[in-house]
Every structure is written in structure tokens, then in C-alpha cells.
Length: 121
Image 1: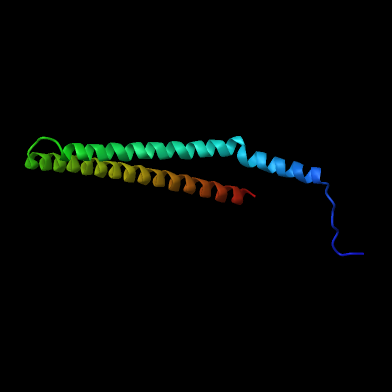
Image 2 (image 1 turned 180 degrees about the vertical axis):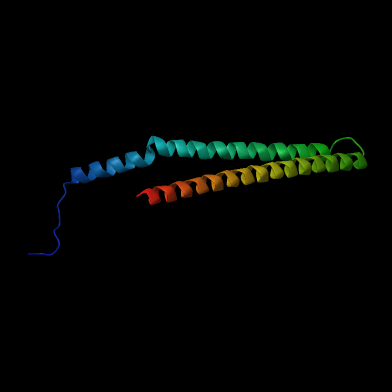
């Protein structure tokens, strides 16, 4: 008796399998379509943001004002942006510190409750 068994499949069965595979490849399930759409949307949004930033920079650089005034505007806007970023970082740090303290207190409460339950057993 041979160690490997060859299974004969009729050409119609094989063609049916190929047809189903091709249908899946060219018409993927909803989940894959959704992920592809999300990816395309994020690319479009990213391109719009980059285009808006480039347009703003070019608009400032080619504005009909003196170079000194333009440089002052750029420095003012850059300083405002840096200050806003620093504020956001401080807020984020405070939020993380608060979260860590709450989690550690909950952990201590959990540990004390577990010790108490272990004593009563």
C-alpha cells in the first residue's frame, strides 16, 4: 500500500475552488474593504494637512511685507506654538502623574483586600 494517497479531483471541483478564490481576491470581505477605506482616508487627510501647512508657509514667505516683519511674524507664531506645546506637555505629565497615583492606590487597596481575605481563610 502506498504511503501517500493521491486524491483525484474532477476538473469541475478544481475550477470551482479557483473561482471561489478569485472571487474572494477581487471582492474581499467587508472587514478588508473597511480597513482599505480607513487607510485611504488617512492618506487623504494627511495629504491635506501637509498641503495646508506648505500653503501657509509659502503664503507667509511670499507675502508683500518687509522681510523683517515676516521674520517677526514667523518668530511670534513659532514661540506661540512652542508655548502651547509646552503647556500640553505639562498637562499630559500631570494627567499621567494623577493616573499613576490612582492606580497605585487601587493596587494597594487590592493587595490589602487580598491579604485580608487570605487571613480569613
